Image (cartoon, rainbow, N blue to C red):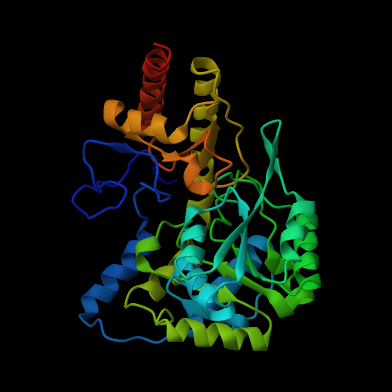
Length: 387
């Protein structure tokens, strides 16, 4: 049994999330839980060797992913289709440059991870969005609109996150097949970011493109990493998985041109150990996060009934509908007046201005305190707004 009530003291560690000691931060998508010994031990052992020079990728790194996906998802991966990359975001940005052209359309489903927009915009490609249909507090893919955007001859790449960030929706297998059929029909490459794959409601599994990739191998790339589920983003490691030898060569050239294909001294042994030894930790973490989500749902229903939160099947993030309140203004008020920080929905798409994203991968005490401040802040904000 692991103790998830105990969290790390990240003050004075140059933590992006905890940089302001006066703010309770439930925004950036990393965890506050104590790093387990199966991750820290390989780091200590490497430090004790006293050498931190250039390293190459060992087969054991890829084999650990292969074994992990077979064990947890009954998916058979081939290590010859894997390429190391320093992270999912570096991979996405590199592939936007390497497999599309300046002026091309790159399509996303909105709301989506805000960095997708940056990776497209910063590389002089055109962002195209297919907005998800929001009805009865649920999201559905608008396949008519998606096909319309895919058939545009200027569209060369579709980027999706599966599970979907920030909304936490699992994409159904039949939906994945439909997406892949459309990409194949219009000769668009699909890049599926599956970094959140292991963060799911207890006893659930996500539906991976990896299950059906062999049937659509000419235009599919999957980004996977143990970094999100084991909270190792700062160690910089991920994998590109692609079955097409032609597309794999384009990936290889792109990530090497951008110098994001070489490991640091710590990433391999830590990721290997986490993948080989972390199943129990993952299962207990998912249960703890789910319990935090239950608390958020019950609190909102009881104390802020104007808001709406439906527990999603994945992610350690709560996607909360805040009615007709401008999320940018409201969260600025909460941060300044109540010293609590969440993510505003508008970051994830212009169809999400009335949402906030709350990270509950922290102690129950922090969640309780954050909800208290949210309630008090909302009451004051509402009174100010109505005067």
